[in-house]
Length: 499
Ligand SMILES: Cc1ncc(COP(=O)(O)O)c(C=O)c1O
Image 1 (cartoon, rainbow, N blue to C red):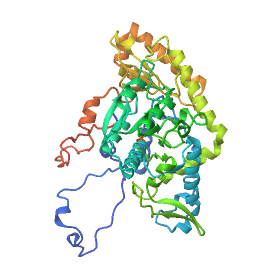
Image 2: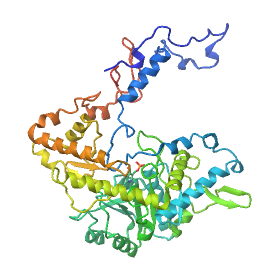
Image 3: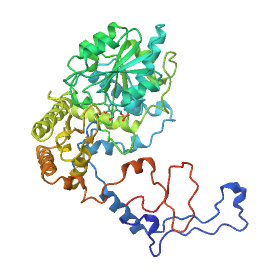
Image 4: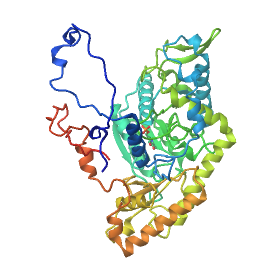
């Protein structure tokens, strides 16, 4: 373990602040309760040491810019750097949401065009870019569905969610106050239509479908699904976070869906992960348009303005108009690729996933045989017989310089490993990953302990993940200092919290 920046000390370090002016009394500015009882412990390192410290730490990170990152469901694809660069241009980075609309017509035009492009790509009549994430888009969609039923004088209290849906779907429905009713998948990994027919009824507000579902499989009975739910008076929600499987190939709007969200931070070139700002635009068919969050753009003789006068709107979902940094990246990506380029993205994503699936088929068990879309789920159930679990395989991959797939999700597959290669990887990279996975399958048989003990070559070995989640070690306390009183009883202190 290398030292923390707080533990390092360089000669000639730090800035020296001037002494306070004579007669200065801090108590005039700060209440006595805010005054420190003892000196603070700030890092004391020279600039070069700071640069080296953080550069070294950054090199210990695993990232898509250095290695293959097949994390299923999370779409860790390479995003063109040009889109990041454009967001730093002053015309964009220096505008402020409090500026008068007349001064930011370009930005408003980008928002309008992006809404229009998403409408075209997904086959929906209107979009709002306001939701800050996929789950936020789901929440917005469900609020609109709730407002729609209310406006029609209907009380519907249930949301149907297949067991192959993304976990945020039932969570969003519960957050909106709905009772969540699970619909099972059939043996092929698709919505069981008989179960859907049995569970849908006058109490159904909505059916939420993740497509491709979390098994990476396309729901082939989709038109039947939307017909069944509509016949019962329910609305149909499409979780389109994984649209990178279907761009230019199929549109939720044409399949009969009433509401859809997409994740700009998965499909449309916005970097995903690290908790950075995402964006989950929500799109609707005409009959739900008046419920979209406000403000919405309106064309006037003096240009685009924000319209707040929308009495049926579900209201504002967040400050300003969404995560604007995400909009420009997606706008540039869509404009640069065009219709044909976007289709190629999905075709290649699906091809890569099916190629990997075929290469691994003999070595790992595949719970569902259907062709997959942009990702697939295999299982470590064969390896479990030797004491090797999905988690161990994920850790062993790190020793080979590859990131682990998503493990133990979806939960309907035992020892699940969910693999999403994405469209941006070459055949060489896919082959290297397949070769390593096959090698690990052989190790699991012949030398299982090597897999169980992994990783052995990474800067940090296997950590106690339960402890890290339950008792995160987030605050450094210098040796000899008394521990600060923390707001959360769960936080502990020590100097070994990171490398
Ligand atoms: C299918 C699906 N739906 C919803 C979400 C939720 O999106 P977010 O994490 O932006 O809330 C994800 C996230 O990866 C997803 O894969």
